[in-house]
Length: 104
Image (cartoon, rainbow, N blue to C red; front, side, top):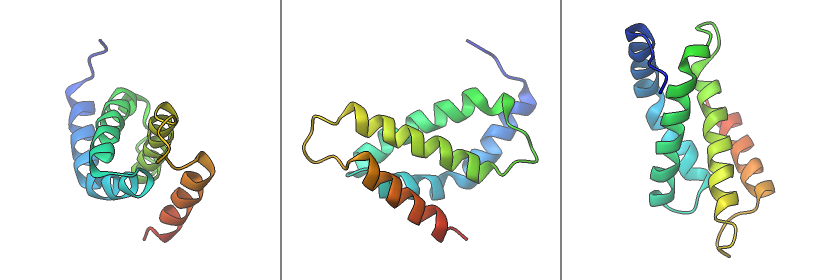
């Protein structure tokens, strides 16, 4: 397990906590249920935490985290694609584009 510095841990907590509500709403718009969104958000938190060491402060964290969330939601849906109630990738991509375009 890769241990991060205290500064990286603080940076992760500060940035993730600030943007978590918007990320959760974004993920919720891409998956069918709140339970699915909670599961995806756990994966998003892990991926963002693992990669925060390579995050450049000058980059937009929110945009970067939304990209992570989008890929995690798509992976989640792909893994559950046997369920007939899952959106196809094209629809999820279009929904994601609309939500990102509507972001302030």
